[in-house]
Amino acid sequence: MNLDRLSELRKKKNWSLQDTADRLGIAKSTYAGYESGYRRPSFEALLMLADLFETTCDDLLGRSFNTTIELTKAGDAQLSIDQRELTDQERIGAIAFIRTTRELQ
Amino acid sequence: MNLDRLSELRKKKNWSLQDTADRLGIAKSTYAGYESGYRRPSFEALLMLADLFETTCDDLLGRSFNTTIELTKAGDAQLSIDQRELTDQERIGAIAFIRTTRELQ
DNA sequence: AGTTATTATTCGCATATTGCGTACCATCAT
DNA sequence: ATGATGGTACGCAATATGCGAATAATAACT
Image 1 (cartoon, chains in turn blue, yellow, purple, green):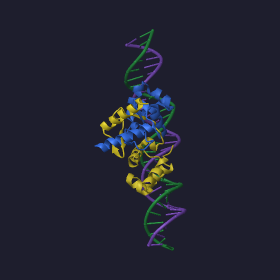
Image 2 (cartoon, chains in turn brown, blue, cyan, yellow; image 1 turned 90 degrees about the horizontal axis):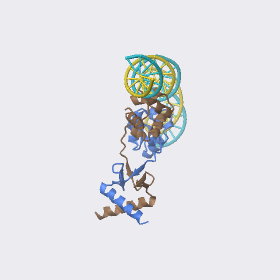
Image 3 (cartoon, helix red, strand yellow; image 1 turned 180 degrees about the horizontal axis):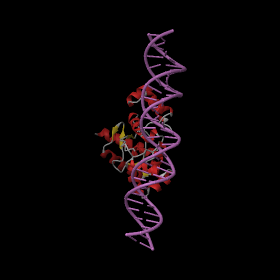
């Protein structure tokens, strides 16, 4: 259970170990330890990593979270279509639409 | 940075500390330590907790990740309405429906 | 090639943290 | 009062962390 994605994410940003460590405010050897799997970040460091690399902790931990988003529950997730966020009314309208199509089956 | 949500999640399931520890295969005092903030789970334990409580590591760590889910991109997330997963056709239908309503504004 | 600068990897050590068992307290039922 | 259950806190052995320092490896430049 190591953080295999770190190296990939860092290289995508074209950062050196030192760059990355500086951005996190930790020692280079510490960050290098994370990538190599020799050491593990604290939770604080994990959160910083997720922020820095713009991803989730689950992603860094290699957890594919197949959580299903229930649309009838507002606030579970922000949805968008064509890069434009859905209003609550739009969401409710879409739910009604789907329910109707299902009933017509 | 403690795992404040644990207690809430456990109580929602009506489990005792012992129940929860048994499900995780760890000692009661160990799990109790997580809840009280006296101890912290390893990454392995964190993943087990997320699985057990059916949530994300980010959630347990108190990280609100405001990632917007773009519906036009399939595979970004599994959606459901009334606990029934949306088929791809339903998703596409809903997108068309929203686009139309938007155009009519 | 030789030299210097930058990047990456590994280790030792002091310190901090974990997980477990155990003990302790409170509540409730018999 | 006794026993069962749920919750809390602590001691200790074992392990893990973060840092600096030392050591490779690579790049850049004359």
